[in-house]
Length: 155
Image 1 (cartoon, rainbow, N blue to C red):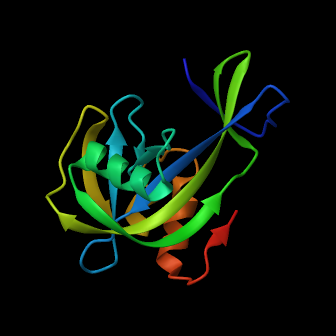
Image 2: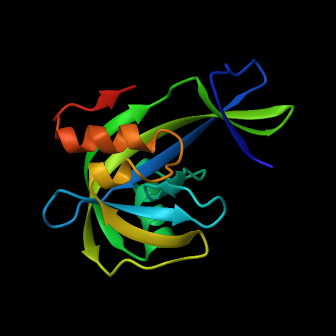
Image 3: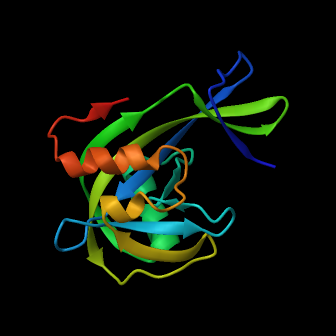
């Protein structure tokens, strides 16, 4: 079973996993699209791990399609997130540090929907997000997106 731990360093046996997440703003640019994970009930940005032979752009486009049914186009890199204090522990001998690239994307086709991976979705403001149970450090990624800083954050 997966556990997310905070405040532990990965030992030499740990692995790195590259992931991508997508920030999709509503028309007012005041809310972002979040999905609720079917496996643990936590809210998050659409996204997931990079598959071998896949670019990060292909990953974020595929993950958004799989989780929401939306077709998207990448606008910009918001940031790179590699906090060594965040890790996923699968068992006593297998831990993974997530390195995530967060992109702003725009919808090119479709309407948001559910999938096997999602149990709910909605557009939320920062104030509304404060009240949700969020996955890992997605809140930081969302805050960074709202700053509209041109240079990518490196955290």
